Image (cartoon, rainbow, N blue to C red):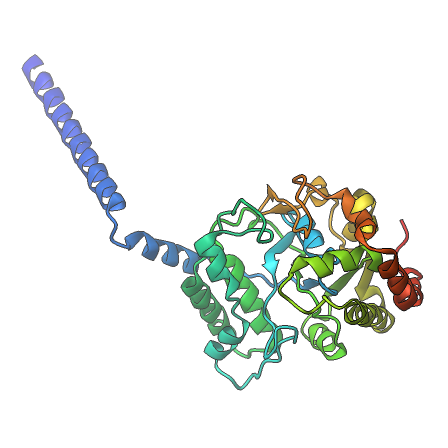
Length: 362
C-alpha cells in the first residue's frame, strides 16, 4: 500500500515537472520570438489598436489668431487635462490652402478625405521627435504610425451607414489620437478636443465652416499688445518677409484684431477673447475662467505648459531662459526704437482699444 502511494506521488511529481518544463520551454520560445526582428510586433500593435478603437467625437476648441500671439502657449496649457484631448502640435488640416478650413465633398471616397486632412508634420515628429521651436535642444518622443491612422480612419467610417461631414472629422480625430501610441492622456471621458492653428479664424468663411461642423464648438482668440507682438513677430523667422516691414506687419495685426471683433459679435458666447498679457501675468485667473468657459473642472495642470504631460520650454524669438511661462514677454517693447513705437501707436491704438473693450477683464 505504501509502495502504491509512493508510486502515485512520484508519477504526480513527474507530471508536474513535465508541465513546468513544457511551460518554461514555451516561455523561452515566446521570448526568442519576441526578440526576433521579424515585424510581428507591429502586426500585434495594428491588431490591438484596430480591435480597440476609442471614438473621439467631442467638439473642437479652436485656438486661433495671428501668429506670435500666445496660441501655442495656450494650447500647451490645455495639454494633459483629463477632460481634454489636446492636439500636440498645430492643427494643419487646411485645404486647399493652409489657412483655409477644409471643405470636404461627401461624394468623394474616404481615401480622398484622409489625404486632404492628413498632417504631414506627424511624419517629421515621429522621425525626429517633437520640438517647441527650432531653438529647442530637446526633442520629445512622438510615437505615431501614419498607416495605422489611415486604417483606423477607414474602419471608423466603415461602421457608419450614412456619413455626414461631422463623421469625417470625428473619424480623423479618432484616427489621430488612436495612432499616437505614446499619448499619456488617452483615457477618460473627454468634453473637448483643443487645437491651435494661427490665422484660421481670420476669414469669415472659415469660421462659418468651422461652426457648421462643430455647432457646439468654441473659439478662443488671444490678442497681444502690438508693441510686444511686433518685436516677436519680426524676429521669429528672419528669412521670411511676412513681418519684416513694420507697416505691412501692423496692417496684418489690425486685420487680425478686426476679425476677432467680428467673430465675437457674430458668434457671441461661443467665442472668447483673452489678452496675452493676462495669460502670462495672471495665468491662474485666466485658466480658471477658460475652464468655466468650457465647463471643465479646473486642474493645476492648466497652469503649466506641457507636451504629453512633460514640461516644455517656450517657443520664443528671444533667448530662452526657463522651462515655464516667460514673464519678460511683457516687455518686448523695450527692444524697439522710439520711431517704431510711434508708428505702432499711430497705426494700432484705436483698433487695440476696441478689442480691449470686449476682452474679459481679470
